[in-house]
Image (cartoon, rainbow, N blue to C red):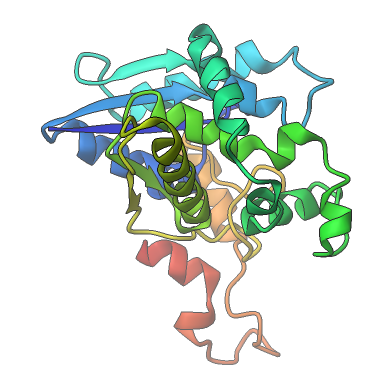
Length: 253
């Protein structure tokens, strides 16, 4: 019986990207012979927006409500808030002592997130070094979140796979220094790597292109009715190519 760990940042209600990119996998894992720990990653919110914390509690309630609504069962899995387990921060401190800075600077997901937030304009490592440690080093905190439970598997989307590989590297170095303490967790990729939003980009709250799990049938129909189809069509009467159509790709998922 393996140990599964995964979490989400409480940024509010969830959309179809969360459902197909993570929650479907969680629901499958809770039916298997695994010990599952799914947590509210509230400390991770501070890595990108440390000045605004007033909405974290309300966002947590909205997010966990969506978890329960899609079928996550607290009788089968452990659901908890990251900040309630102070040992996460303690292990994060210890892991940061054995993690070389270049491992963090080269992380492609950190760079992409920083660019989306307008914090970076290039891939130059000197510019990456301008980031606060919370954002640059959040993969170390993520490693602590996983290793503290000696997880054997972590369900993630393909964009988070580099973080799990970093977790494996950190565990390997820690074990080399102090003995065989942490297993190296496997990356459990979700079946759907990207869910297209209403404008064709990846579905995201920040892009304002999402279909929320809590939307009514009427709201969903209205949104999908306006969704982008083949962007290369010159006229509405031109035939489209399904593989280039975000609406079709969402429908296929």
